[in-house]
View: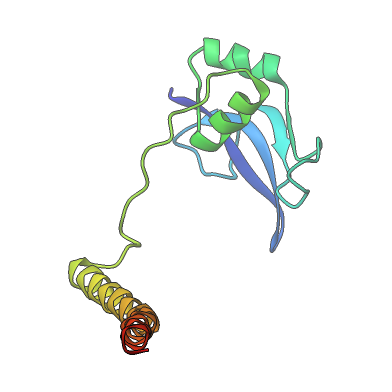
Length: 141
């Protein structure tokens, strides 16, 4: 029987409250479970000690018997020091713009840089133009 340590939802609509339970993985999410290991209340602030309560000894006992914790429960247990922290994989790049859009953005940036360079260049050019004129006046004078 594949046993998992997972969340079982309770609470009202839009007010979730979860039990951390040991259950057969083939059972329904909120169905029959073997043992309750703790609770999780996501409505409380993240720094609240009441947010996640787990009986770590019970959880370790069930894991020794072969129960596999779910991803979320693994994070909770790693925060309590019961298991090592899971490796977080690299995020996908689907949210980034596609290739053509990136090329357009790069072209727009280049245009902006050229415009800035041209805006700075005329400010410097008159200063250089005045200097030779002053030198001519000194020679004639």
